[in-house]
Image (cartoon, rainbow, N blue to C red; front, side, top):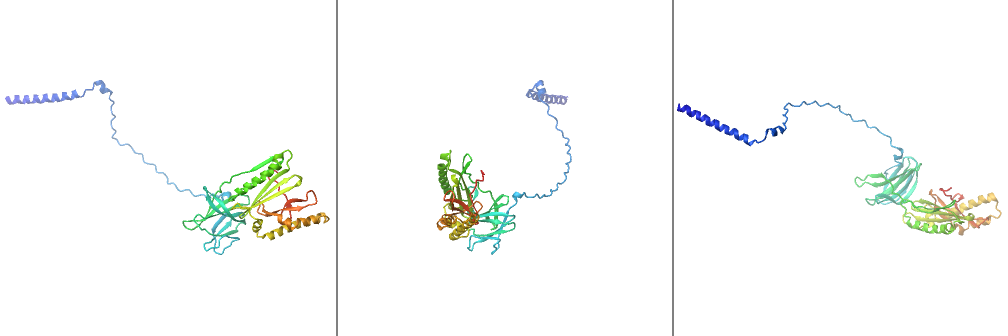
Amino acid sequence: MKRFFATLVSIGIMLSLAGCMIFDVKEEHTETKEQLQEIPKQPTKNTVPQKTEPEETQPQETEPEETEYPVPPELMPLITAAFAEEGDQGDIFFLEDESEYAVRLAFTAEEDVTYQFCQLIWETEAYEISYVFTENTLKAGETFVAQVDFPGDLTTYGINVTDQNGSAQYYAVYISGRDGSLVCQSYEPAPQPQTRYDYNLGSFCYHIPVVELPGVNAQEINELLYETHYQNLKENALDIKEQPFMLGMLYSVGQKGDIVSVMVQESCDSDLTYYSVYNFSASTGEEIEDADVFAAFNLTEKQGRENIKHSLSKYWDERIGNLGAEGLESYKNDTLSNENIALCRPFIDDKGNLRYTVTIYSPAGADSYDWIIDDDGNIWRETCQEHQ
């Protein structure tokens, strides 16, 4: 009996302790019923695996076939370059260097072109011509060979070519420092400043000469040209606008190798025309002698003067044949005198031809008149191409 009672008491104590534990938990959780309702329920996790769609198999792309497009005519090279074989002189040969280090460059024309072979220098992110060696023309398929030296890593030559339509291409030619191959690379020339001094008085136009040629040292000569001919223009036209004595001024600029010529024609009242000729070096800018101009055409000065005399004699023979010899022989003799021939000036016209300014004695009007003459005895005066 006692054992049974003790068992009941033990069970009661255990139940009491269990009730205390439940009570303590309820006391720590202090949220009200309303607060519990405000807590959003978390969605149950979906443990079902998502269905994965099979990837679509893309058809394998094939590489498109390459299409060759024709090169536009304006981008086709007018000339190609390569090393020439020793002894090869092509159709036109130019000898610049005879040392043991000289090499020969061959330039073959793809069509009829004119070319200018020169030395290039690198200035302000562009090539500029420092010296013009030679210029000529090539027929399609013909080759120009130049024997030159490359004394330094920066030595660069240039060949500028122009087709029959006037389109020009410019190439820099040098030897690769990497593998010694010849590089012929097209380039755009540095833009040249455009300076013009043009004046108009009614129907009379005046153009003070300015030399603007790539690679030509023309600063000093341009200053001389402006100072001289502006003063002439001012005194003979601008200061007497109501009745100008000078009725026009024009000029031409020509070049052959290192020689640049400027011919200035000042046309005045009473059919008088005055010519001024300036020949100077493209590389130094210094004026040069007439003998150097003749030499550019493989003539001594004596031969050049004889050519002038022959041309003037031919002119007079034709004139006397048309008008009769009476009274004209003395004017012919004065024109052909050594003193007069010595005063004639050679110059290079804008097409690269050798021309002369001459004084021809005349029975009419003034004692003599100045003209331009060529080797065939033709005489003329220039006309303004802008205001014809």
